[in-house]
Length: 243
Picture 1: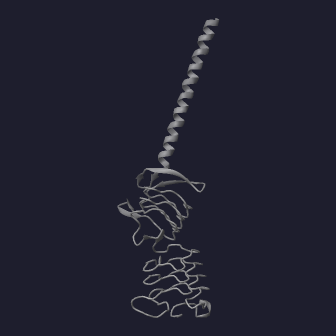
Picture 2: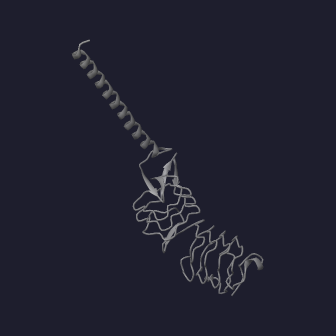
């Protein structure tokens, strides 16, 4: 084979290699696109999502997202739509929720609404709308059924007054002098909470004691009652224990 023929053969081989490499590159790009689409696909069809790294963990933030138990404290969710998202046991403390949506989405001919069960949500910045049924924003706190406010201080505040939060977790909370008038806190957890001097009077009673209608089926355990006594020595209750 002449030198000229060898050169042509080598050139054709190089061209084939370039085409092969180019084809592989396109396949890799296509695969990446497919992966991206799959990562934001819901069970009832595709949905748009945004990958966000929050406290060192990457989350797919989208409607219907599963964020159960996630530490989302301090996150910025301005104008983010988390309708239908599962936030069971999640931590939203100090998060920015300006314009955030926590409504419902259609799934299999039904409505799937955002789930706030056992949610931690204090120090909230901004106003989200809508919120799940029976949930409200008050003084930077999201209040609703089973909200987790354990270890927080509400001393001498009115934040919990007239609130409806059955199953609220106030374990270890400082409730000294707290105004609880009109609050509906059935099934609340008050283990190790301090209720010294707390106010629970309502329009139906002038007594200084907590009433069964306010604290129905509450968990009392080492709870400091309004008069300073301990629930462990008062038949495991602070109901009808006056000042």
